[in-house]
Image (cartoon, rainbow, N blue to C red; front, side):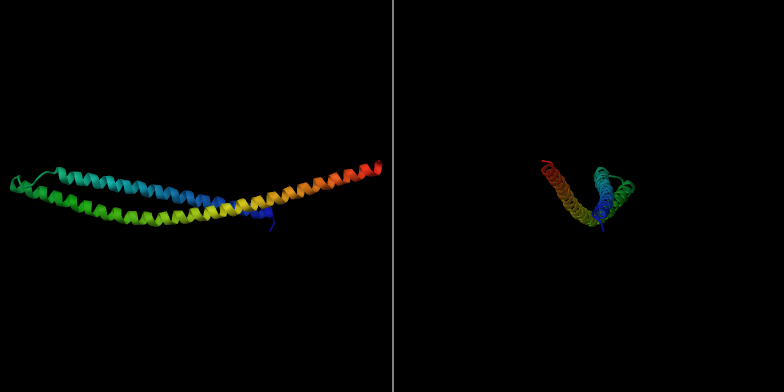
Length: 146
């Protein structure tokens, strides 16, 4: 495989890894936004439970209703906490996948850069050799004429 093909293939792989990395970053950002919504909802649910007041000072029917309301809000908050915990665990798995994708992209990028540097060095050496050959030919011609 020629150097140009190898560099083109490596460039394509780096571009694909970059696209994969960007998709994973976008997904991770969406998951972080979702976790933030969970946290804000939990805060609101806790405020609802606290702000519903003391049910002991109310008449019996209202006290029962208020107690049921608090239990429902606290149950919903518990369910939300569990969902948040599971979501954060999913985020941790996604973060590891993101880190692995970043590492793969970096390694391929370094390989590409090294190969480009080698090819550039080879081209420079070839150009220097051509210039030296031309200079030698000119010198030889000037010696024959003079």
